[in-house]
Image (cartoon, rainbow, N blue to C red; front, top):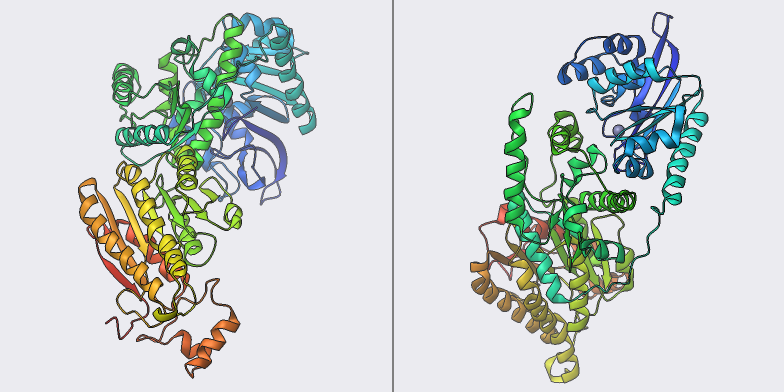
Length: 626
Ligand code: ZN
């Protein structure tokens, strides 16, 4: 019924103030809070008498309206009240619910929407023509309510926007919301405008199409001015919608309810012509900005929804979470458009009305609620050997900096390492080109591309001197520590080349590169060769704006390899206590997986923006390395 911050609810109660006087208080949803997850602290307590008085003013500018709402709350830590607070205040019912239910906006955005709504609801609903939310809408509702409301009134329908219901208690108001939305759904069903059979479609999931998607992401990020996540949805519904012959008509009318515009922009992009989209967005801004009350600065002109006959629906966001919100909204929008089309035609609001909401400071404030985004927001990192130890710590460090992270490991537990929109864990044998390509395709479909690559996976077989080292053992180490990383670098290169802020690769090497020890010939040789490979890559890929650097950790004991028993045995072997053994370096400090991971993440960040082809020890200082 509502998506991501849309809709609002309120109740009116009587409370005693500090003087012991009774006061009527409106508890209304805080702006930017989501009805799906809201708690008590998400409701703003505002003095009702003051709101009713405000509603009688002939006009009230937005900044002053917000000032009045915020300064007449009874709890200083309360959120900013919804921009609909005054509207909730003037409705003479203790409980009020407001949603943007799909069924309601399907009908009000259809040809003859108002006639249909009156036919469905008779005198139970007051019908309000579209006015932008805020003070003017509250005034209009007060006027229409005074004239149209009768004994049967239980709510109101706002054309092209949504529905309100009221009640004497929360249950009654909510029950009426469900009933009234059900009536709209029944109307759609009666008119064969509810369920649609979709002809089966087949989606391609090739590496070639993943390249296309990454190219699209690069173009969109360039237009936006920041890196973006692009999630591909190639399900039957999205693909068949994108392939409809009338898509250029039905998908170019506008959003189902105005507040979606801040997430989806007014129109989806059809196909992949980003510069064409940018041009038409600029024309939209330039034609409508002069009619705005005050001067506006153009927002970024990048699309948020892309409909493409091969890719399906692509949802664009500043983060994976944002892209998820965009996809949710557009999945509902497609249903709404199809239902309104089945009723005779989808008719969204004129561009001017959508522009006013898109450029309304009170709507934009919702998007700013999050504050400054972390450094890797909108970027994608791939980490190998991610189920444990340094790899797992790298996943944490990159997630903490806002990156979307693809974690690969031979161990299936990688798939459940983390939850959340920013994480994709895939079981993958890196010695199989086919498996890795499939993982890459899935990663790009989910996030849009690849910006950072952390080559961490490797094996360290037990000590064995050259004279007794078996060929198969040598080859196995080379296959995993060297050959697989070569293949990964080659396969990732076309994606890293498209990274909006330049590609970054960090190789987790070893102290054994600068200072090898006896008994680890295959390991030391493989890591040394990998180090040399990274240096060549730095030379070859600099022109593609890809940086590649190596870290050489030593004696990192909080990994799966080092059980307490092994640690104790090794310490005893060197005649040390475990504590001495762990800090056996120049700085006498313990080096943890997290230390290596934090440096790995920093090497992908702006501090190391001018560094490539370097290798850096992270070992507490080793006299042989120094
Ligand atoms: Zn609304």
